Amino acid sequence: MTNATDSWSQLGPGEHVCWQVSSPQEYAQGRRELIAHTARSGARLLIFGGPADGGSSGRPPEILSHAVRREVHEARRSGQRVRVLAGMDHLAHTRQSLDELITHEMDLGELATHGGTSVVCAYSRLLWSPGVIQDVTAVHSRVVGLRPRAAVFRLTRADAESWKLEGSVGLESLRAFSAAVRGALARTPRARLHCGRLDLIDASAWRALVETVMQSRGGSLVLEEANETVCATWRMSGYAAYGAAIEVRG
Amino acid sequence: MSAQLDVAVPGFLHMVYPYAGEQQYLSGTVAYIEHARATGGNVIVAAPPERREALGAQLGAEAGVTFVDTDALGRNPGRLIPVWQDWIGHLARTGAVHGINESVFSGRSPAHYGELRYQEWLLNLAFAQAPALALMCPVDTAGQEEAGVKALTRCHPLLWNGTACVPGSWYGEDVYDFEPLPEPEQPAEQMSYDLGSLHEAREKTLGWAMYNGLPPARAREFTLAMSEVASNSVLHGGGRGTLRLWRQVSTLVCEMTDAGVITDPMVGRTRPREDQLGGRGLWFVNQLCDLVQIRSAPGQGTRIRLWMDLIPGDASDGTAHDA
Image (cartoon, rainbow over all chains, first blue to last red):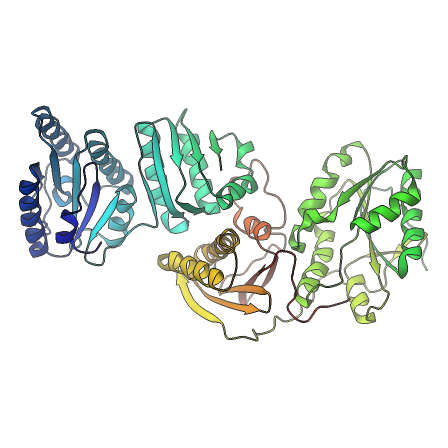
């Protein structure tokens, strides 16, 4: 999907979408269309953060994030279906580390998973570096925008206890991968990863996975439905004898 | 002929045994095994099934010889060293180990044959610190070109003459003399890669491999191997490299070149230690591919070719080598 306007008609409950915005005009138009579409669908749209004009809010992201969660919970209590448009130019700082940003995004992802809320996170290409925008897409369920950049792997919620790991994980994704796995373990210390749509994990990514699990203090991972390449490289790595609490099942 | 050497002393004794026909094979290998047993050493024989059968019949059931299947190597000679390390691992704790290492040469392509010979040469480095290991490598010379046999003997410091171990005449100790890698006979697909285009290189390799008939699982393994080498280019080879892909009869070849230099000839050819967290990329490559050729030198950079047979076990590139 490349066009935000078309995307809103397909916006389903529980989706966590990364919208890569090229200009303030594009943001304004997409925002208007999302408002109109949400109104037609009978849901309520909560908008946080202003237009993606290249500026940045002075308020700490964690306070804003808390405010988003509070308002979503209040809206849900009133029985309304809720959608969120999160202007990340204001809800986060470009000076935040990728780890913090992905943690922040995974918090927003939890809103989507646990309440059926649709969350659209808008990132201005004028403000954020292409690499950062690409990395954060790894924890979104979908990416929209004109010619969007997307990470080559994706780690998203499957249910309360498990996650879906898709794509391929290689050298170019290590920082985002480690941050996403850390985030998953923080939320589900004994996490199961469904790997039915995972193509491969390279040697550097296996190492990153082992290090992340070992640093998680008690965390463990089970990779399920892994293809034979993933299973074979895990066996070849010899990491099973290294002491990391990782199990790989075909 | 020099004086007989004692195969029971500490260190690594690596000898070639040129023979012609089964009768000479049996007489030489049985003499070697009897010598080994006389010194109280463990004996392990890695040979094709028909050789194991013939030797087993000759030695009898109580011979105290461990037979292992060379099929464990697969087609890639790059797995020779770790497989031997595994085979001798537990035996080495109970005394000297005497091995027979027979690789199958017939039907191999020149590329396979060249790498097999290089592995024989590398065994001298891999086991230089072995507590007490003797490895005798029988080579059937029947119908072989003398140059091929001579090239193989250059990889062995010692010679088994059928009854005794003596110094070899042609051993080239210092530098291994690689044959130049021939240019592809077919036009090659080509692209440059860096960190930002690793995924594109993987997509290209996967699509090309499947288009050329590699089944999906093996195409994925080929792609992962390519990705490991390309990642090394990014990390150690100047940040970028060039990928070429071509088909050579029933084999797919993937080549990567970069500006880096690999100084450790054993890289990727020994099993990573349990306490070693990194260093698995080229190990994966050797375990996944049917052949790996690494050429690297200061001033010339690194060129790595990965081969994957379209039909597992069929490494024919149309120019089978009989040496």
